[in-house]
Image 1 (cartoon, helix red, strand yellow):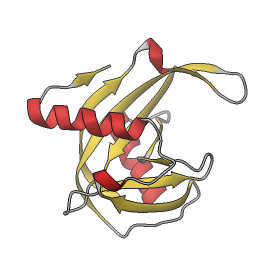
Image 2 (tube, rainbow, N blue to C red):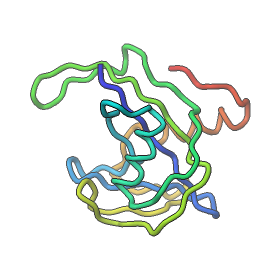
Image 3 (cartoon, helix red, strand yellow):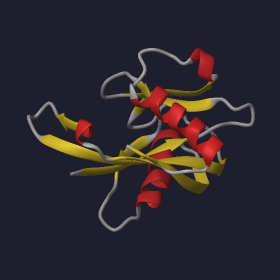
Length: 141
């Protein structure tokens, strides 16, 4: 099992923060694996900080991605079922770092002008956030 968190950070104009990952060049949301001794919410906060320099002050979970379709094999031949919790960052502060140890770029984008190449998780997560915000029901996949 691989347990991780993904964070949706939006600015005052409603644009979505995406990072360009240094390992595969794809644009994605801040995300990563939970470490021993932290909660899944703390993981989301830490990943936002590590990958963007921003400080997530308040987060709330809106989706759990846990199904067998979340099974992947990495470049070393190890197979994992990924359990990801998606969080909406309710409040944040700080200065955006466009380049970090894990990213080669970052920025806020309008949803109708997302950059390429984009991770498949981005449109799915944004669609699920829309459903959550309309229904106030946790998304379970």
